[in-house]
Length: 529
Image (cartoon, rainbow, N blue to C red; front, side, top):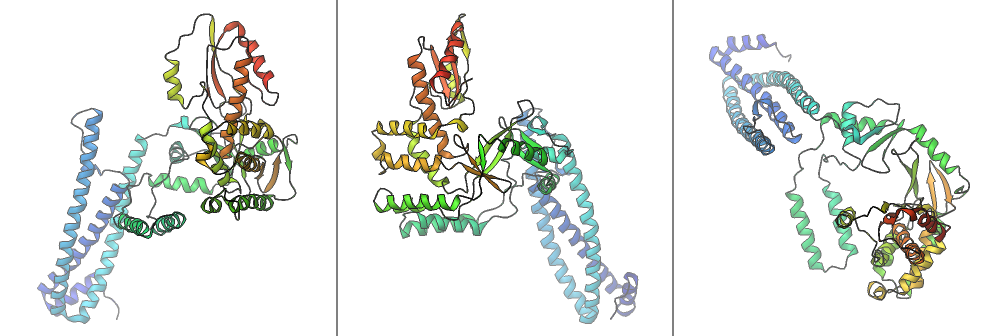
């Protein structure tokens, strides 16, 4: 049975059932249209609340023009928006109840067959009204987003565009947030959370009661969990997708500072391949050594576990399976001419990654025991403000050139061995002997192979920057050099402070060059500048 037109349906109802029935049908269809508009209005307000936007009708003007006054006004606007959402839900419930009784009344007046035609007509009207309301609300929402985006301009100091691509404003905005910025997820990954908790329970030595308590706590937390308001606007979300799909560019963090760097992929690859083309430092490999290294390391770990110097829990944690090749990438040095790249190797998927972290935790207590060691910039600032530099003195900084790629493996292991032999607390931290630790350390430091664009290379000299234990070993080596430097120079500096390989030293101005020459003479492997 074909559906009559809008006017045709109303004419049939009036002729067959009278004017009062016609009024009831019109009221029923109009109420359904109100419901559609109200649902779109609720969706608009929910979207505004999720994206931290305030509809113009609810924006509270701050009566006090201070930072606190603006915070109070913004908080009030958000509360008004929540109140509006609750009000709209109340209206919707009343409207749904009203529509239910209107439908029952019409069914009594016109019968089920004619009501089915009216219902079909009502559905068409609702769809048309909802489409128009949705389009109207979308325009309002886009206007709010554009207004807020224009007020929050991107900080272009934190985005360095070296590519030939012209970045849009939303792309600049999202890049200026930094590469550690994480958009709010669209859903809570409950299955992943539960699986992670179960894996942690399995690997830990907890009782059944503690495990059950943990499971109940997680389930309770997940049952009440709600997504936080989104922290990214739709235009920025689209910008993220556009940048991710663009294969002609590469996005990297700057070597220093918190800037995000955009480079043409061809330029980035050319610089990396030029660096890898240095045959004095890198050699191409015909075969991937991952499996061989993995088997050798696992054999050593198994022997230590069978001999009782490594617990079963630690053995299974350090044991490697299905590992990958360490990946090489470069960090742009935007503060230097021609923007060279600092080579960094990601060891996360490598066979020695877990072992390297384990050794770093074992060696950390013997690092930083010298008077010159500085933990962070705050400690250095507190120290330097208490010092006075006379007119005959200068503050000078010395830096080791390419420290990590110049660390000699044999020397690093020997320095580590000497430190461990003089560490009385080592038996409290592990059952491993000094020889065991040095053997495992050698495995990590000699695993200097890496991959770039599908090809595997061997780093001939030093160690690759990126291994967790490398930083600890490098500091041990620097501290050993430092002790020799200060004890053998005829006029030791009045004070010297060091963070890793960066130093701040006070010297008589006429001794700077001779001290510099003295530093370079201590170790021919490592050069200071």
